[in-house]
Amino acid sequence: MLQTIREDRQTNLGWLEPGFHALAAYRLGRWALDARDEPTWKRRGAELAYAVGHRVSVNVYGIDLPRTASIGRRVVVQEAAIGVHPQSVIGDDCVLRKGCTIGGTTGGDTFGEQAPVVGDGVSIGVNAVVAGRITVGDHAAIGPNAAVLRDVPAAATVIAPKPRVIQGLSSNVARVGDEG
Image (tube, rainbow, N blue to C red; front, top):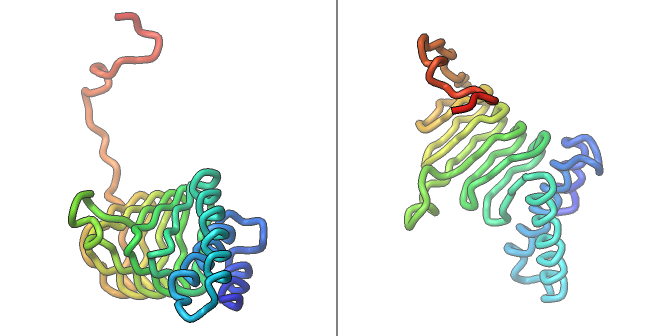
């Protein structure tokens, strides 16, 4: 676990980066879940550190990396406002950029079954959404603002649709300061 945390520090450019803080808390929490043979006091200490670190990551940075997710090594967590489904799988050497979400499509009874699987070396762009029970293949790239709801093959690139200009709607939009 400590070697993985050292890799996280190097990958995320140091001790002061929010992504490193979130990953370190995640690693401690994951270790506490998996370390059945370790003494209780060690597991409880790791659980407490995870609880505090995860709460700080969520409330201060907006980075939610639940310990029940499976997150690979050398993952880069850039900036803030990143959400990960509790049952998702994220491979090694991935990059998660600001505002990206790896989550389910709906809540309810089937939420736990809706976790995406993200392969190794995947780059997920700013504000991109990967949602549902889908697989993103190794070394794929998800562009900014893309919404991915279907499987993505290995080494593929997904981009958001081109913005369209729709004529005639601006007259129906209320403007700030208009009295009415």
